[in-house]
Image (tube, rainbow, N blue to C red):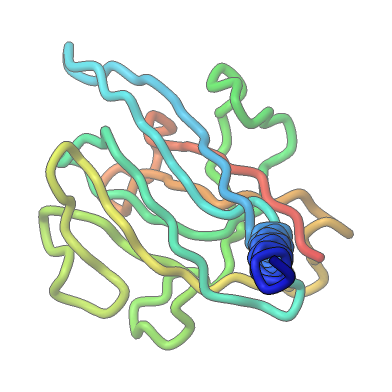
Length: 185
């Protein structure tokens, strides 16, 4: 009888320890957030969705950013950018200015990893670039840190977001701007 009680108590303790470990693991994992937007271009509606962690390490880190529903005929840049004055994330009617500056700038050499180009017209042929997957999807890694530009620190001097924006073939269009605001700690 005593060994049965001991066995039951041991199992309960193990379950409790496992639950505590899982809770600690969940509490320290980065949370992900999703930003969405629908745009109509040439009569076709695209339901853009962007997912990335919304709480980032102030020491810098690589994050995975995924998207879906993008127009595969239009390339986009993915990166950490300053939210322009007057832009309210989630309200596309305020998206009148290009998100800039962005960490890493135009990283054509691929040395910083701070931005990624997704395009079916040349993507995958240069560093930090890829082509779209099915349904206008992508999954990319970008390096982020709060020191976005000289004298500009995310959360201290400026507000920042993981963004997509139209690439160099249509840099003036705001149709593909999607903002996912982030914080650093």
